[in-house]
Length: 305
Image (cartoon, rainbow, N blue to C red; front, side):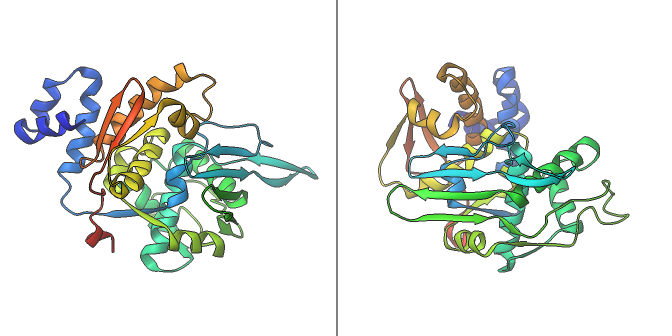
C-alpha cells in the first residue's frame, strides 16, 4: 500500500486515482482522506478487541460466539428478552454497526474519564461525522445492535496468564427507542448509558488509540475495521519483523468463513483498505501470509497521552 501513498504525495489524489486500476481507486480515496486530515481526531478501543473480533454476520440467536486470537480468546454469550411470555435469546452483536457503536462508547468514556456516556445529539452527530446513516432501515439496524450490546456477556481469556476478564458492556438498558429524528428537531437516542465497571476498568487499563478519520473511511467494512485496530495495536510494539501465517490469520479473522479459500480474498481486500487508512503501517503480503514490520502507531504517543 506504500505505493499508493507515494503516488498521492508526488502526483496528488486525483492523478493517483487515474494511475491505479479501477478496483484500487477506493484505496486512493481512503489514503487521501487520512493524509489530508488537518486535525487529528482520536478514537479509542479496548486492546482485547484488537486481538479478536465480533462476528461479521448474524449468528444463530442462541449461539455462544467463540473466537481465538494469538493471545486471547473471546467468548460472547447472547442476551435474552421476554417475548410472549417466553425467554428467548436475541443473538450476539455483529457487523460494522456494532463495532461503530462500541467505538463511540469507548472513546467518549475515556475522553471524559467517566462511565457515563452521553447519547442524544452527541451520538447522532458522531455517527453523522463517521458517515453512518441513522435514518430508516439503518436506524432499525443500529437499534438492534445496541440491544444486543446491552444484553450480551463478554469473556476475554488471555492465553499468557491464568487471568480472564468477564463483563457486560453496559449497566441497565441501552434501548434506542422511537424513530430517527433529525438532530435539529430533537433527540435520536436516550440521554445516558453507563459502561459496566468491569468493561470500563479493562478499557481504562488497556486503551488503544485510533484515528477517527480511519474509522470513518472504514465504517461499513467490519473486517477492515478489525484489521485496522489489530495493526494499530501490534505494529508499534514490535522490535523486529514478525511473520503471521495464513492459518493464524484465518483463526483470528475468519469467523463465518467455512474454508480458507473463501477467507483469503476477502481478508486481502480488507487489509488493503486498512493499510490505506494507516499510512505509517509497514506490512508485506506473501504466499505464506503477512510479515508485520515495526511501524509508528497511527496516533503519535504524545497526542495519545
